[in-house]
Amino acid sequence: MDKLTSMRVFAYVVEHGSFRNAAHHFDLSPTMIGKHVRFLEQSLGTQLIHRTTRKQSLTEAGKLYYQECHRIIEDISNAENLIHTLVNRPRGTVKVNCPVTYGKRILAPIVADFLAQYPDIHVALMLDNHLIDPFRSDADVIIRIGELVDSSLVARKLGNYEMTYCAAPSYLEQHGQINSLTDLSHHSCLGFQYHQGECQQVINLPSNTFRRNNTRLTSNNGDVLKYASIQGAGVLLQPKILVEQEIASGHLVEILKDAVPKAKPIHLLYRSKHLSLKNRTFIDFVLGAVNLGDVIVR
Image 1 (cartoon, rainbow, N blue to C red):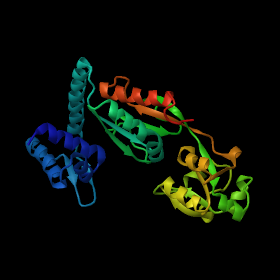
Image 2: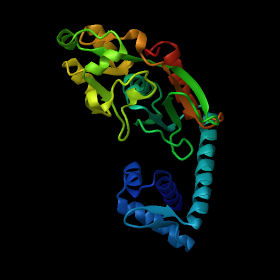
Image 3: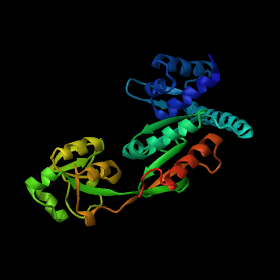
Image 4: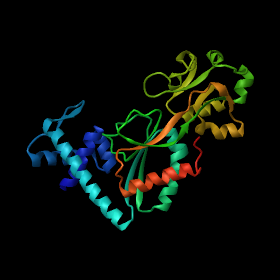
């Protein structure tokens, strides 16, 4: 069994906390992932991971070995990047983590253009609304919406994330016009919600809008809420990039334009200024597409 492959598998299991996730990533069975870890444990003569039916955790030896595996894998990657830079032909895989709506509406077409222009570079684009730890994730590029707290990351601003209230003309005809945020307490609302916790629209809003007692539909997917709003199910508060086509076509009408939440900054993040050629090529391409106006980012 190839030890370097086993080290990559072990590091991925540690970083993602799951044999199943590693199996999906490496296109191997969970049994084979376990064999790679056991191979390392047998060659080292010590246990690296405590495994129970409910969870797994690193042993002291596992913690030390993971640090060395991470360093070795990084060194190999840096060596490969030096060669790619020397021949000036970027190649490899760029791993990107991005929020769902921004990824679908803005980043996806940029990535498609990038792939056409750079046939030797692959992109692994993961759309996920959960905040990931940049220093435990294997993502090369992370896109975040909101104020930044990770001061050690390199950040490049992509624009601002604007929200808008809207509703279907049929809903407004049936239930009346909405002139203030306090009016929303008498209307059906459609709320975006993560797996746990309050609807996200509630946060930092100056009223009790979108509380559960008048939220007819909650979902962790903005498209679901948009489709319901178009059918007249209620009032929507969603990113402008998600609903701008429906507003332009008249299927939805913007309301409460003076009461929308403050726009949040959008940043492209990476861990170090010393970028590999493939990552630098991808980042420059994304920044160029946004700055040239190839996509709509206000």
